[in-house]
Image 1 (cartoon, one colour):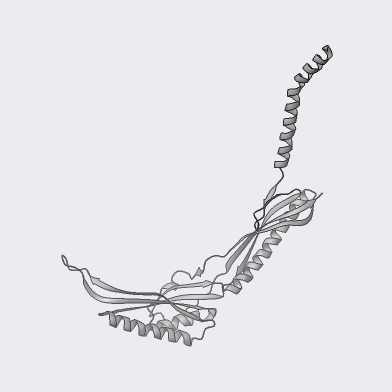
Image 2 (tube, helix red, strand yellow; image 1 turned 135 degrees about the horizontal axis):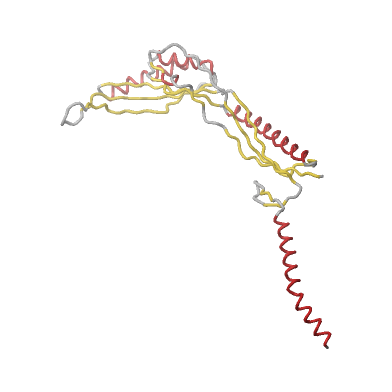
Length: 263
């Protein structure tokens, strides 16, 4: 009986230590599990734990020459009556459109993007309400073409036909060129990621076995490039065809790749 009491007391004495050790082992195991990296699949949103992996990001940039130009051409008319202003503006605008079509630029598109009719007031008389001096009509057309060599001729013909202002000149990528540039940028980004993963694995004496996961982060296309200052403010008397050369557009793609490795 005395021996049983001694054993029972000994058990009670070591029980807290056993509990502490068990808790520590559980915490250590949980810690190890929490240290296992996880990735979230973009298509399903599922999070999975992975081991023996190298995760890198790759960036690829390609430069592409714009293959589409757009020009905003305005006609401003000012007359004593609204009807006179509207009629004159319509006549000149149609003449401008006709001569632009005669240039026969490739993939030519013309559309009206702005139209305004507003009275012009005289505020010079003190203590009297302003008087209407005239009515002003402003119409603006946007001309788009993939025939960049014809830009200068379009501007020259438009101003000769009565265009008042060339408000802006810009360059962009057509959809087919945009898609091709995106593919090239993604290819460059993939090579960049491969180089990074190989460099990391080699420096640590590891071997790249396979690809576990690829995620495209996006492709950046800058907005349309505008012509240098001054070229977008040509007046009617400047009818000599200007020489306008576009700059290259940079297209950048980014992706993440998770590689499996072995020792």
